[in-house]
Image (cartoon, rainbow, N blue to C red; front, side, top):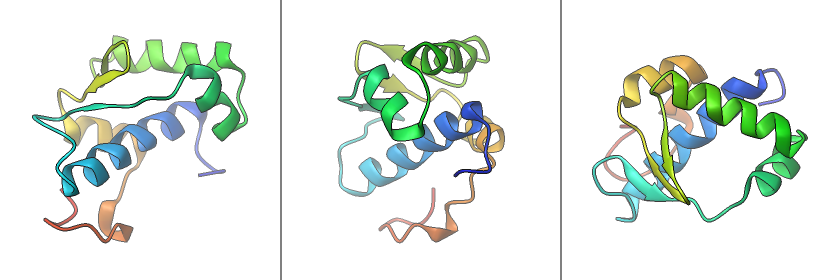
Length: 98
């Protein structure tokens, strides 16, 4: 993750969370709850909350992520995977890599 841009890191997180939550039945129609704040994401990625906010806005503008409070919807998973450089083969989740 350290070699990815902040934008790619955020996109990657949203991809991975969707696939992991799908595997345990906690995602429905590419929608899931992500109960973390922008401050939490900043801490996890080593970014300021302001930069996290900018990256989330960029993902929204690209129609890659829809966020309503803590509810996340991925309208086009393939496009988000491409933006993230996401390769799900490292995940060992039931139902395949998505």
